[in-house]
Image (tube, rainbow, N blue to C red; front, side, top):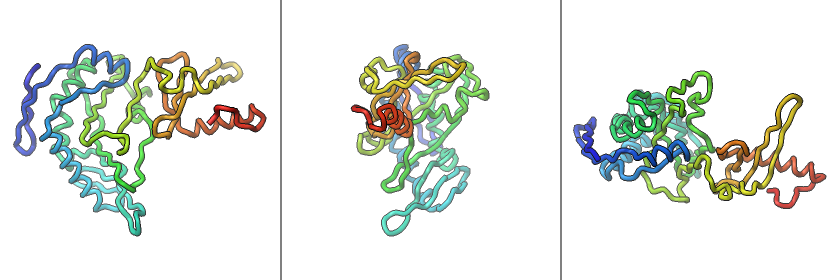
Length: 268
């Protein structure tokens, strides 16, 4: 354990005892896709972050269209709400420009040291620094996705320098996380409990083939807890994927046609 001193733009200084990541945590990151590190920031620091997000929200609500303000892009539109309208905040890009304290936390040694250990490198680049809000009645939602896929991961422009993905994302919980407030959900990669996803046994199996190409097999499971997507996997891979419900819709059509226009028992 070591002490890390962190200076803030407002002149304040925090000292935190930081436990280095264990080998088990590093293994969990690469085998499951994530791990939870508790007590990284103190209550006062978390309060400072929440206050910064509150200020960003108040600024965003002043706009009715995408606007760049103090070096930060506020992607905002007005949407109907009750008898009037309200701001829908789709995202706030490079929020650390308008709120430097958030940028400071983003490069905090406690986060950077963990990222460095996972990446196996003392050199890294910060790709994004965004704020996202989901407020009552604004209609904002985020479908299942992997952020790395939006950063050209796996494409020719991406250079996997460490051979293990070369991508780390950190998430800080500022509010209470409950099933009722739309929190972030994470799906373990290669989960051994396939039954938890309705994949042991699978609910349906689709085999696709075309002339001159090998057969591809896809197994479908249950819907996710929020019923916005369906679990699926390829039997030759350990990953479990989430597919949009349009995939479930077309799967149902296939079964209906195979059953002579009737939806087979168990199809949903």
